Image (cartoon, rainbow, N blue to C red; front, side, top):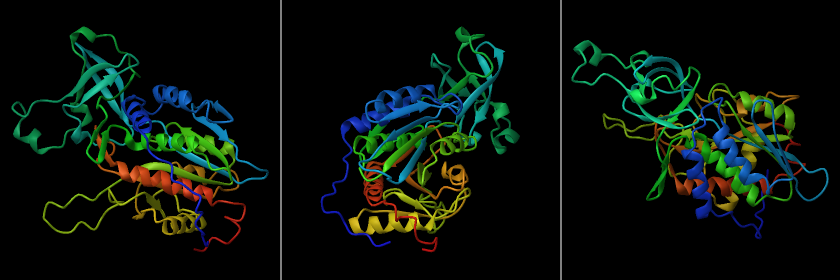
Length: 364
């Protein structure tokens, strides 16, 4: 698809209020199945920006911002509100609690991590046997969840019930050109949609879904896409940046994306093969507007697009992600400029969507 740059277009800016919003979103604890804290923030921000909104039976927030004109393309943007975390499974007394992992977390990096438990955000720590006390056999084996406990102290014994959620307690911070915090996967996507609602393109009807339970199977997106029934969809997420050097000094050629090189456009992942017409549109917009972007190396993983594209008669879909390091751990890192360029690429691309966008065949 040939793109002619609109000389009147101006990229939305990331202002201090946008960074403050991302901070609040990152600091909120909203493990899959208990997204209340993030949902409350989102509703407070979008209620005056959209024409209508609702919360569905699963807890997704669905909203519409209509463009100017009739019979406009209906474009869905989706970003998930939930994060990986923990669920209390049993009380062992004296403030020690067994727990299960919710979502994809590597148990090897959990020992010693501060956590917040329950709606009262009770502070605790994930405890493991100190290395001084571990046997030589234990030192050689990977840490298992069964060997870990959440320690809330004796004063909180018997206060937490089985089924209570817990999340990492990391505080958001800005470090030079980077933003550090927990759950930037996918609070950066949530903040991106809100930034776009503050500067909505007028040539489309914008349908937005702040989804639940993405980290445990893309569940909320399935319901949201069926309800909204868009013409096309873009899932916004944060993708692993596997660009760290290898310990043997060789060049690292295996990566999903690289931090600092712009938004990552998906061609295919473990759950979706992106619609080639949308791939072509977004790449051409990036080239014409000179907005940095990268192609996410095809491989494992998936976004909400994995369930969106299979709804109704099929919904042409694609994913765009901000690259981030150390995802699904207590602290992840993204570059501020990658987030800025993601918002710019999305806004410019949305501004070029029309009723002819999907008229051609699916070949690139």
